[in-house]
Image (tube, rainbow, N blue to C red; front, side, top):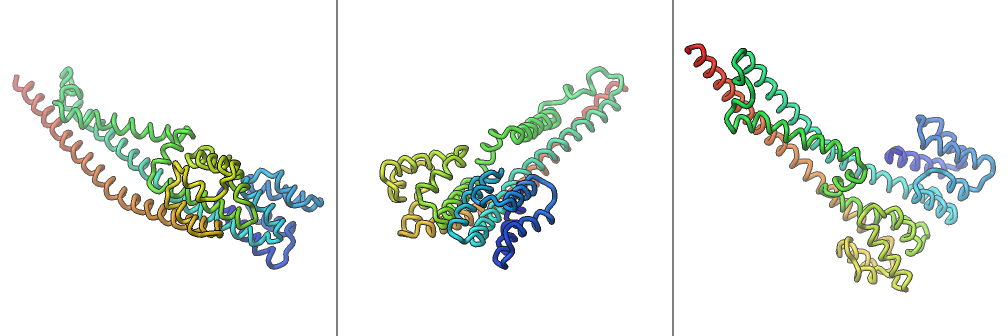
Length: 333
């Protein structure tokens, strides 16, 4: 499911409901304008269930949609403010899409740099092999890589091997989901972005009418694959033991920074507002760190590729002069 499309659909749905369009008619109109895909099929089935008289809370629970989304729709129905809840959801998924786009850029750009580096080093090595083979045709071993001194050999052979190993390891990492999560987790701003999403999710649930305990219970299974999932498990234990305030959670913190707790605790009784403020702060910090990283990667990668090509060209020249010298020496003999 594309988060940007999901955000747009919910915003459009909220606008239609505010103008008085029935939910069934709004869903039918949206499905008619959407391209084929899983989201369109799920919304079409939802519209069909509603047309047959199935209550929205029951119909939405049967659909293959994000658990947070299903829960928020049910809260919107109970609070009689479905358009308002849909706008909150749209804002949430729009911000999530912005973060995902930046993270994809941070992941894709190093892959492009590594790929270019690998293919350039291979091309230079093949060029050297072709030239020296033609110059030393008929001279055993003189036109091979092993006739080089240490530094030309290092530049022309080990550079392609080094960049090739990193490049294919990089590709393999993104084919294995568990490895991909670890790689992405090391990127600048990712932890801040994930914490911002967690805070915003909980803020939306609290604003929708969920209790703090219900919000934690809903989000804990979603966060099991992250380090914050362990902290939410500790929150659940605190709630069960009767310590259901954020100031109680802070005493046993492990992964969530103290600034996060400080922001929420200082919001007083307005826990949802404090979480929204924390989400905004960490979202902005994540975006800023990603911007700094992107601006730094571009010049650094250009310098690395330039140095690499320069060293290989020097090694290529040395190798060609060595081959010319050997061929001249053989001709004189």
